[in-house]
Length: 312
Image 1 (cartoon, rainbow, N blue to C red):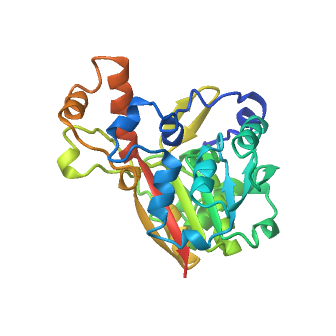
Image 2: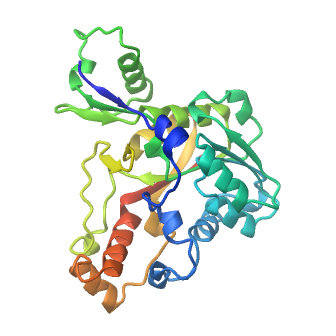
Image 3: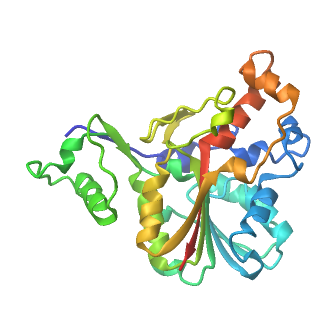
């Protein structure tokens, strides 16, 4: 069976020197004067909005030891520390450049930093954490590309370790099997979540570009999200990422006896639909760079999904 394994480690370790090419929702909302904040019901940063939302779903005041994997510039954790200075974060990142930026952002706070590939992290390290966060980075983990449903046929034995792992995951977690056509599989994201759940960390937050995202019916004429149901390629500078099949991650979590809350980023980043915003969305941002940026941002609020997991 012909397939490809998409990996991003080499880029993140050896080439990454800015996230300017990857405007995450978190980074987009960080500058206080960004025009994007004018769209929000409450003018605030991503981390503050997320923390306040999570307070409805988990006892954030009781959480102390937090592991953030792939923390970008450290903006999310800095916002969390604004809300709760008793947090003791551990920032784990494969990128030396980003880890240095996180150290700058969290200067003066009690934080630890580890440079390593989370898929190679010793599971014993995870003992004792109250919460794990993987925000807008699951698409960086390895993804298998162009797999065929013939993988599931009894007449298709294989010595390929990647294919055996895929088959084992489908069996172990009872994933819905594609019936026809080639498909992509977020093998790295699934391995990462499996490691977290097996460690028993009580609370988990995941957020990423979803291949299963949907827009509420009343907004569909204005906000265009075309979800294919299989992880989709996102071409970026120096590497490719893939969107995430969140339903598979939910099944992993449920197998380990976690409950889940799932939704779009719009749940905790509500916007006010003014006449001007309706006009920008109807015109698809074609009348200026700022309009285009706004249109993309609003679409992202519905393209990105989150999972909040709580161990029972």
